[in-house]
Image (tube, rainbow, N blue to C red; front, side):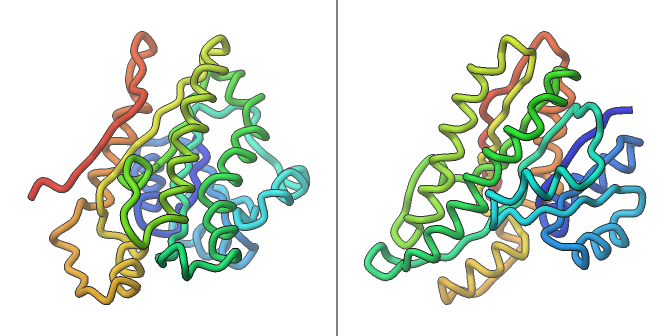
Length: 229
């Protein structure tokens, strides 16, 4: 049985991915920001194991994980959590910059660092759910795009560093996806939200599974997914 740890499993892409992994019989560990959220996600994803760690406070992740039981091997670590706050460079406060950089970049780096020993044991796979904003920064998207550009750099460096240990690293760059985060973005943009215009979370989850399930003689490093319309 393969074992995977998924962040962002409370909604959107992470929730769909966790559910599909469970349905095929894999062991799924989900990361929740607090005990209440862990119970809620466990109720929504029967069979999953929930652990607590706040991605908004990456400096406390080591302490939090040290107090909990973790798998002794991991076949997959999927970073699907993220936050976004739009605004012009002239308007974004340091707090908004720090929150997006913490959750979207520093926390994935720290969580990966902490779990590398068990990933090396199983020659596991790290998947970073990035964004089209990780390839191009548009007006009002500076902080979010900066965090995602950094995430791409993190993935590229990690891939080169861990090749000798057999750890594979993939970056997924979805276009706009029909998730609660996308609804939030539309509210910030003052635009009407129409989920039918965007990629479904299931399509992105399928892309992630494709990368995870690829035979060991191949390695998908970067995958870009865009709406068909």
